[in-house]
Amino acid sequence: DTGVSQDPRHKITKRGQNVTFRCDPISEHNRLYWYRQTLGQGPEFLTYFQNEAQLEKSRLLSDRFSAERPKGSFSTLEIQRTEQGDSAMYLCASSSRTGPYGYTFGSGTRLTVV
Amino acid sequence: GDSVTQMEGPVTLSEEAFLTINCTYTATGYPSLFWYVQYPGEGLQLLLKATKADDKGSNKGFEATYRKETTSFHLEKGSVQVSDSAVYFCAPLGSQGNLIFGKGTKLSVKP
Image (cartoon, rainbow over all chains, first blue to last red; front, side):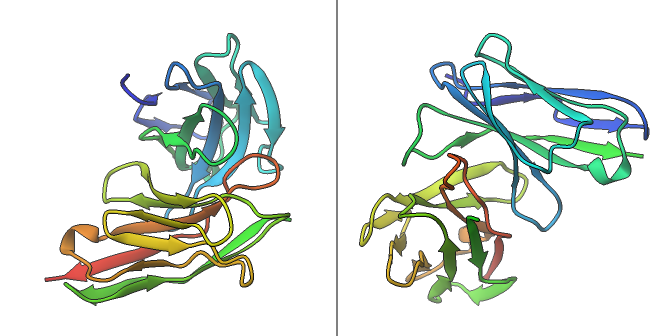
């Protein structure tokens, strides 16, 4: 088990372009979470999946953001028409069930919008 | 809604000093509580957790006790080391099933 993998590690894009990030969770984990972290702040919840179902979405997730987990395994997070305010670290985490088990986080994808 | 308030940093201590990082939360019921740590250049790692009132979570010399009366989960360590320099995040499990993170407290330990 190699933990939670995120790709790419870094992404620089021009304002207005679309970007897509990928997350591969720990294989036996059925829950997958996306968070966003800006410099000096804690991670902010964006959305999460149980298997392929998207169960919760934060109001931070504007209509330019979309996430999928088509087969209940890997997930993608797409940002359309990127803005400079989207520059952040995007974190993915997975867990095996609800309750007191905590999450395993990936190393994140750092997005810079220029 | 669910929220967490964490002691502002940065905190600078000398090696072997005592550490306390305060954390209080607002949540429905009695959520599970977590501390995560982020070492420089690394991802978030689970440090310790507590699942019910009066539980004490511990790991790597760090401890935190779930106090439902004060809705607190303060992190403590009796003798910090330079290698403990990191950012520490308190995180209750929210009613929607997701962790809610504080802003983080940066700890710097000087030799």
